[in-house]
Image (tube, rainbow, N blue to C red):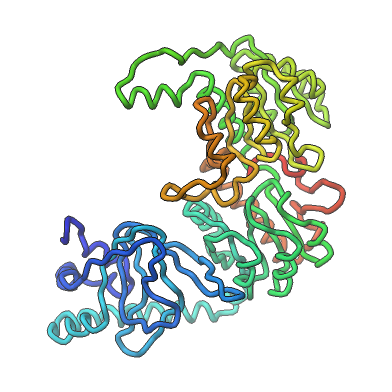
Length: 504
C-alpha cells in the first residue's frame, strides 16, 4: 500500500504482472514512483525508447498518433486503473504512440533499470516471472495460430468510431467474435479517416462527419460499407456515397420506448420542478415556494412527428389522461382511431397544446421548424420538449421565447451545435458556446446530453441490427440490396420509418 492505494491490485492490470503471486507484486510495488502531470503534459512520445511503464491512479491519459499534416489524433483514452506505456526487458523497443495528460493525472511509474535491478537481486522473483512469461508465450502462440487460421482470417474488419465503454460492451456481447471490430474513441472525420486503412466497413455515430471529402478518403482506404449505428443520417452525404459506390445502412428503430419515456421524464421533471426541488433539499431548503406545477390530466399535448417514437409517447400521455394532437406528413388513421390521437395542422397543434414534443426528422423543410414565428403561435407558458434533432429548433428564438415567458419550460436532449460538447466530459473546461451557456442559465430549462436512447435494450438492439448489416454485406449484398440501406434523393430508406426518425 502507498498513500492508501493498493498498488498490487493496480499492477495486475499489466499483462506482464497479471500472473504473479501477491508476494512478488508487493516487492515490485515498493519500487514504484509516484508522479503527477498537468493538462497537456507529454508523459512519453511516439518513437521514444520504451523504458518505463505507468499505472494510472487518477485522471485520464490520451493515446495519440500523428495523423496527416503532422497533427496529433487521439486514438483512445486510458483511465484510472489502466496501464500506460511499454517497458521492454530484452531489447530496445520504442513507443508506438504519444501519451498526453488530459487533465491533472496521478501515475505510479516503474522504469526498466529499476525493474532489472529488482530481478537481479531476487532470483525467486525472476524465476516466477519467467514461468509466468512462459505460460503467457504458450497462450500467445495459440492465439497467433488461431489468427492465422483460414476461419478467422476471413473475418470482416470494421472500424467503430466515437465509442464509449457502453458501446463496446453492447457490441462485444452481440458480436461474440464473429467480426473483427476495432474501436476508436475519436469521431470519424477527415483527420481520422486515415485510421480506416485495411477496414472494409466503418461504423459511424450521430455526430461523426460522413461528408463527401471524408467518404472519398474512406474509399481510398478501401472502405466499402458505412454502417450507421443510429436512425438519423443527416450527417451523411448519401448522394456522394452512391457516386463512390459505398453502401450505407442505419438502424431505423431500436427502442422507441426509450426515447418516448425520456421525453415524458423531461416533461414531468419540468412541470413539477424536480430539478429545482432536488437541489434545494440537498442544501437543506425545504421551501415549496416557486415549485407549483399543473395537472397533466385534462391538458392537451401536441406531438410533431407521429412515427414509432411519437406513437409510443402518445400511449404514455394518454395514460396521464391528456388529449393528444399529432402532426405528420403521413396519417395513420388506424392508429389514430385506436389511440385517440387527432391529426391536425401544425398551426392548430401549436396554438392548442399545453405541451409540445418534437419527434420529426431533420430535413431541409423541418430545419428550424420551431422559430420566432411558430413560437408566436404557441400558448403562453407552453412546455417544449425536443428529443429528436437539435436543429429542429432555432435556439436563438427559443431563448427569446424563454426570456419573454412565452415558453414556460424547455426540455432538450439535443442541441443544434452539440458536437464537441455532448457525449464528452468537459467539466474542467470553459464552455465557449455562448448560446449553450445562456440556455444553461435558465432554471426552467433541463438539458440532457443526447441520452434519450441510452437504455440496455436500445444499446443491445443497435448492436444487433448494425451487426446484421455487416453480416448481409459479408454475404455479398451491396447498396439497395441491404435491408436497412439508406437510399439517396428519394429521402427515404429501407427498413421502415422516415429518414432521420428517432434518436441516435
